[in-house]
Length: 278
Image 1 (cartoon, rainbow, N blue to C red):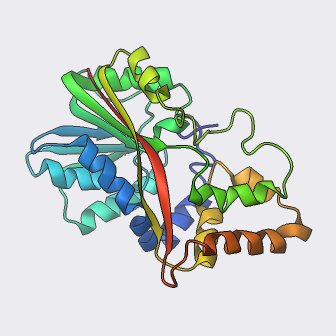
Image 2 (cartoon, one colour; image 1 turned 120 degrees about the vertical axis):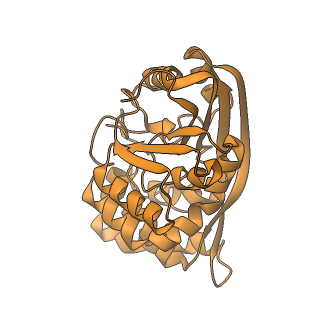
């Protein structure tokens, strides 16, 4: 089961509902990560850009502002309901140089040499067949075109240590089910570089950076959001014994509270940025 070849849990109603419920907070929390990949991608006016697994619209929407009216951005995702959210956000910004459509990164519905730039934020870790997806990205890029990606770094960072690490103390078994999407697939330095090179890309650049990952609310809200929006850990969370639920919630909130300043939870996110050329 994965983000690009199976509709659930990625396409489940719970993710759409949670995306709408926490829309403002989620946008604020992910703002610095979005800015990081937009800056790294360095889209220029007039460019044609493809954003893979765009979800509710970022960074496609931000990239549309960078490319300007002479440019074009296409955002694809397998979840049509998330794409509806993305379209609404683009309309609110009066962007007419962006389109969203349902598509699979493993089988892109675009001709060869269609784009100057391909991007993905928090998407590539979940592709079922990364070699095939990267070959497709390579195919639709023009000669000299560039791919720019952002993936999660290691598990050992505040957002996960204060949530899932606490849960694991009470729920036996693996963090992720065998064959399940792995958020940390490219946490090992050089692993994303190797995947890009295997697909034919050249001039690969990879770096790990730490950016703010700030929740604009209380620790209780941050934990509620995590439980409602997460897909990779949904089975693990469902396995919390009923008689331990209150204790787990209390311990997680206490762990998150260490990052709380009275107004917001000041997590950081360690992420991997990688780019390469065709």
